[in-house]
Every structure is written in structure tokens, then in C-alpha cells.
Amino acid sequence: MVVPCPPTRLLASFLQRGAQQTSKFQLHTGTHCAAKDYYEVLVLGGGSGGITMSSRMKRKVGAKNIAIIEPCENHFYQPLWTLVGAGAKKLVSSSRSMASVIPSGVEWIKSRVRELDPDSNCVRIDDEREISYKYLIIALGIKLEFEKIKGLPEGFRYPKIGSNYSVRTVEKTWKALQGFKEGNAIFTFPNTPIKCAGAPQKIMYLSDAYMRKTGKRDKANIIFNTSLGVIFGVKKYAEALEEIIKARDLKVNYRQNLIEVRPEKNEAVFENLDKPGETQVISYEMLHVTPPMGPPDVVRASPLADSAGWVDVNKETLQHKKYPNVFGIGDCTNLPTSKTAAAVAAQSGILDHTISLIMKNKQPVYKYDGYTSCPLVTNYNKVVLAEFDYNAQPLETFPFDQSKERFSMYVMKADLMPFLYWNGLLKGFWNGPGYLRKLLHLGRH
Ligand code: FAD
Ligand code: UQ1
Image 1: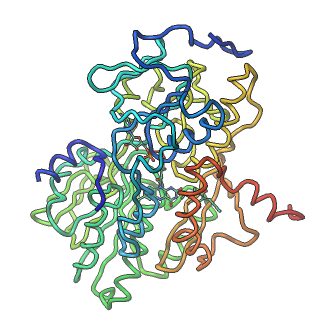
Image 2: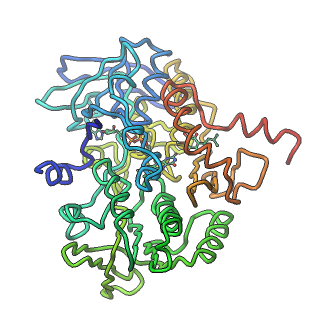
Image 3: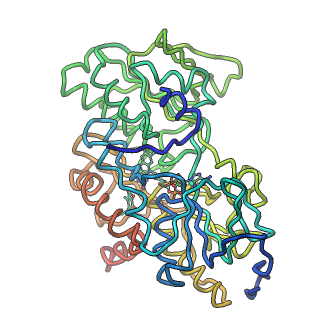
């Protein structure tokens, strides 16, 4: 059985009631809280970035000098949830116990981080306990904010509504899809940054495919209501997706933001972001919600946050802009790229390098180029593999046109990636496909 870790307390409660120097900066490693515990490297969060960096740091400083603070019993391979929501994978296959993914010998502090105090090189956790560090790696992920939509999260008690974004609601997507008979099937994209920006539309393509397979498509009106003004941020893939949308008769409405769900009446309310005050009520027979998201509260409330609340790091080195012994990786940072596990992979290689040089009192050389990837699942056997950089320019691994739907890329997404994730990324051996790309493009320009 999967033991879920609540992404938000609200969602959970309703469902359950149910003194070193770099050449550039002076490190603040001389000051400590009156803490009982001290670690050379302290990692916050046991998700993709946190486990990956713990594995890498273990090789640098030894397991006994590292602790990881994470409250959840289970670690999830979230990219699989797209397929779980569409009935192509079981939820249990996306989960492993936290104990099994934390590198052996690394201390697991099973608690929530409550406060960050970088001026004293310490963090506060439950029971007012303080832990101090020499180097801090922040990998706290992104916060789901279902409660910003009126009627949620309570609305998830009703059928016909699901969300692939939470372990608690992803199986409801599959139930809603199976239960769909006729009418509007609505898929939403919020008015905030989100993780895996392709996922809100992947489940639409899969739902379309499922309805075709089960003979219900003729009676379905499939609608993608997105807060954005484009279908995807990279032109090459946007053009390919627009073709697919046309060919499959999917309706896309831009600049439409979900603000309310009335689950007892099966109604969804959208605001028009270009016409303040104008709203539209649409009835649904299936609703897939991508919630608004934001930085973790503990980061937002700390001196480590930028003005929007994200961990404020150098976009090339991942070192904090003001506190040189603090580093950030993944969804909780303000790195101006799409938030994905693929991005975490590329960032982990750079961050490993950055920290190693800072530890030796040297300046980092390698620079993160913003690499990120989004396998756009367009059918039960097809994927468009988007890969791009900070400039939203394609940075493709394979020597063929990745904007075409391919079976091989589906196999990569559904079967090879999970293996690479558990055995490569989390063990600290996968930097992303940079080397593979260079190898496969030898002789090409
Ligand atoms: P996470 O992996 O989310 O980890 C954050 C950790 O911090 C969690 O374990 C959490 O419990 C912990 N935490 C939070 N607050 C606290 C606190 N106060 N104290 C202590 N610990 C705390 N990426 C891809 O590359 N490809 C895909 O195809 C893809 N598809 C996706 C589909 C879906 C539906 C979803 C939801 C995500 C998808 N992603 C995909 C995105 C990917 O899963 C994330 O970008 C990645 O997990 C980010 O890693 P992270 O370490 O930053 O955050
Ligand atoms: C990737 O490196 C990665 O991290 C493990 C993912 O997350 C699950 C991905 O989805 C993708 C596509 C990559 C990139 C890997 C290759 C081989 C293109």
C-alpha cells in the first residue's frame, strides 16, 4: 500500500478525515545556533533533488557528515503520475520507502523544516529543535495550492474530478475518465509557475485517446482552458502540438483561469485574464485540475527568498546570491527554466561541481545552461520529447526530429526513465543527457 505524504495540510485533512572563504564571498560558517546537532552538509527535502544531492555529497564528505530533513515516509517518482491518471501504470509503482532511497549512513531527520536562519547557519524543525550546518542544500520542491480555487480541496470528495499533481488525487483522474459517458471534459492550467508544465495537457491527450478506444469520443467535448497565451513555451514543439490539437478536434481556450469549482452542480468557473471581471461557468462531466503552485512557505518567509518567494540562486552555479554556503536545486529555486526532474538531473551535476570547488576555496567553472525536458505524452504509445535551455531553444539528445510523435520515446518515458531515475539519478550518477547528446551529434552541426 502507498503511504501518502500530504502535499498540503488542507488536502490531507479533508481526505483523511476522512569559517571558510571563497575568492568572492566570505562564508558565514563561524556562527552557529545553540544547536544540538551539526552536519557538514545539511540537505532539506527528500525528493528528486534532495536524494540526488545526498548521494553525491556522500561521495565528497562521507555519509556520517550529512543529514537530510524530510517528514514523509515515501518518495514518489512523480513523472509516472501522468500515466497513473490515465490508467497506464499503477500508483504503487511510482513509490518507494524514503528509508530505501536515502543513501546508507546518511542521517534521516524525519521532521518538517519550520524556519531557515542562514545568518546563524541553522534551521529549526519540529519541537523547536535546531540543526546547524556548514553547507546547506535546499531542495524543498514546490507547494500545491488547491485551496486557492474556491470549492477545493473539498470538491475532490465528489466524483468526476481529479488531479495528477497529488498522490491523493491522481487515482481519481483515472476513475473520472473511466466513469465519463458524455459531455464536457475540461483540463486546466493555472495562473502561476508549475512543475512539469506539459503535464496539464498530457492527460488531455491521453483522455482523448482513451475515449476514442472506448467509443465515447463522439459524445465528448474536450476543452483545455489555460491561463497561458500559448500551448507550449518552445515554438518548435508548440507548432507540433497545435497540429495534434487540430487533428484530434480538441478545443483550447487561452487566458482562462480556473477560480472556482462547484462540484455538487458539476460546474467550473473561469476568469478571463485579459478582461478583468469577466467570468464563464462551464459544466463538466470530467474535470482535471492543475492547481496553482508557489514556493514553500518556509522559504518564502526566509532571508533566502527572492521577491517572489523562491530560493534566490545564481542561475549558472546554483549558489545562493547572498549566502555563499547555501545552495538550491529543483522546483523551489528561481532558476528561470521549466521545473522538472530532468532539470534536476542536469542541475545536480553542476551543483556537485560548484560545491566541490567552493569546499576547496575555488571558483566554480561549469555553468548550468537551463537544460530541461518534458516528454509530452500524446497517446498511450506516443511521445513528443521536448528538450530545451534557458533561451527556450531546443537542445535535443537524439539525432532525429523530436517534435514528431514517436513510439520509441514513449518506451523511454514509460519504462527506461523510471529505471534511470531510481538507479541513476537518485544514486548520483545521472547528470542528464548532455554527454549522450554530444556523442549522438558527433559530426553534426
Ligand atoms: P520534489 O521531488 O517535489 O521534492 C520536494 C521534497 O521536499 C518532498 O519530499 C517534500 O516532502 C519535501 N518537503 C517539502 N516541504 C518540506 C519541509 N518544510 N521540510 C522538509 N521537507 C519538505 N519531471 C520530468 O522531468 N519529466 C516528467 O515527465 C515529469 N512529469 C511530471 C508529472 C506530474 C504529474 C508531476 C506532478 C511532476 C512531473 N515532473 C516531471 C516534475 C518532477 O517530478 C519535479 O520537477 C521534481 O520532482 C522536482 O524535484 P524537487 O526535489 O525539486 O522536488
Ligand atoms: C531526464 O534526464 C529525466 O531525469 C531522470 C527525466 O525525468 C524523469 C526525463 O523525463 C527526461 C526526458 C530526461 C532526459 C533524458 C534523456 C535520455 C533524453
